[in-house]
View: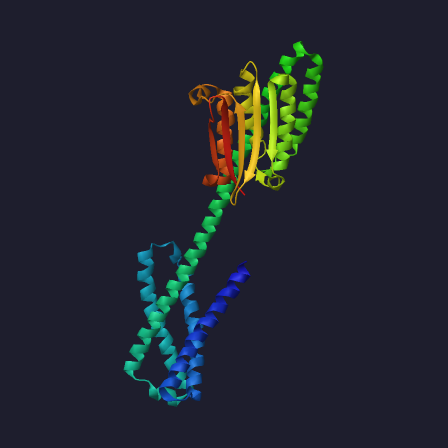
Length: 348
């Protein structure tokens, strides 16, 4: 990385000063109709001195760590240093020219010296501004990447926290359901334990993943519904409607299962006759749209007083927010007097 930066720096140095010199030669040609050997020699000196003097400018900037200074102070120091370097450049140019070519030095006047010193001073000032601009831009990008990595790590920690809360919550509710069966029907309780073992085996493969396919999630949901079916029997009727084209879309693991669990525990299981649960999935150009419809009535004020229910909904909302930000949406409301609908929109 460091070698790459050095190569880029020297490459831009040579290209920049080469382009400036080429422009100077073109100007001479347009003015005089020709380019002499003296012009070519003079131009070569400009390139060499330009690279050396601008590198000296960079050396001073790094030596005294100007990049830590305030912007206004940088401008002041850069202006003074640029005048010095520009004057040094033209002085060296005159000196070398006087040693190597009497013809070239005869062309120079005091007015030329002052004009060219001011010109090169301005050029070095602009060079310094570009240098600082590139440095601050690269630094800004580094900080941005660093912040994004920190945010990503923080989200990972928070997401793992939610997931670590999720599994005990799920197991606690499932074990309560199986415990209720033990006295009523020991055989069904055994079936329930077997079903729960299958679910836990499945969740162990998912817990380290941020996202899984809808197909995997629905398989987990179906296992869970079969477990609840053992407990609720004919009081629970369910159907899952999904298009094969939706199955490959990615969703957070156990998200739909948590909402299905919430619908059964706080809706269907409280009704004497039970009820029906329907899971629909469809997609549009931008979103996977999930609908969970269950028999019952949604009472927001009542749910606030129930820690378990609050956990299920809040956990789902927070996980969606962490993974997708404002791109995802979550809504739960009464569809009619007998049904509740939970709608999720997850970006593809």
